[in-house]
Length: 337
Ligand SMILES: Nc1ncnc2c1ncn2[C@@H]1O[C@H](COP(=O)(O)OP(=O)(O)OP(=O)(O)O)[C@@H](O)[C@H]1O
Ligand SMILES: [Mg+2]
Image (cartoon, rainbow, N blue to C red; front, side):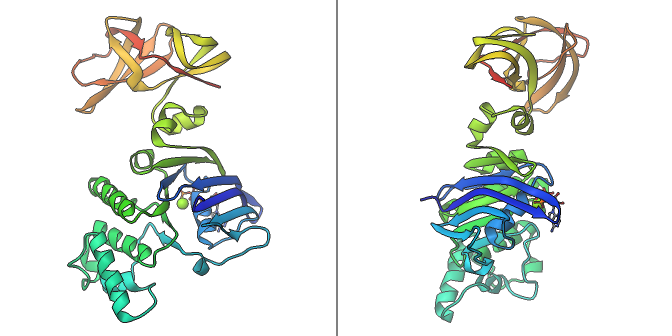
């Protein structure tokens, strides 16, 4: 049994439809990212799962119990769902330990033991007596996580949990949070509009556009086998070339290329920038620009027919604007509608 099942959730705010049938299944112990552009309905979906709002239609099942459908309306406090907010929402007048123990019931001794266990889990064993204002952003984030995990929720929801951290801290805190969640064996849904965050942190990524889930898949599947051009363009960088598919190959401005999966008729060929190979071989392309990153570089190119393509290559070779290079593609390629 999966700990979280959402089926065909719809939601309006006033006359505005926000969710158009969201279905989402999360496996036990998996971290699922809900990834999509601003306003697509990510927070709304999380609020329905948490029980702060109720769907107009559809069903939410948590650990086999229907918490929301046309009849059931189980409120947030009866759902065993933990939540970590973007702004952490720590209680400023309570110590770190008291923040973590806030939602715990039971005898003082048991509570104290659970708080200590959580402090250890998040690597703040010596900081139980500190006040929140005396912590770094990353430490506050870990306290918020410990507080949400302390009552042993069935699932944990995190809404843009890293957006308050500066870029340098963010990747470290992300890795720490993943380690903590995995150590706790927690089933999670976290919301982000950052594709790098989703791909690097999650076991599965649900891509959401306009109140619908377009695809849910492990990161590498999402990247290499997107269901359509919208997903391909949102997750990673894409070159789309018009082509005519004839079964196992496709004819396009880069020649006849083998396909990963057979297709027929007019299609768009997806070529990721790192699959564009530059050198002596292939068709002629003119270098338009170059962005150097140190570990690699992006090169903008123009084909004879005017079509523009971006390549991502090792930083060894130097390409000057105006120069003509040979362009070929690492195959097979994927055809999308
Ligand atoms: N309480 C509300 N009343 C009316 N409209 C709302 C309400 N909450 C959200 N909306 C609208 O619903 C849509 C989805 O909002 P939601 O907060 O779920 O988006 P999101 O994907 O979390 O976006 P972001 O990445 O910007 O946080 C938006 O168009 C928003 O304006
Ligand atoms: Mg939001």
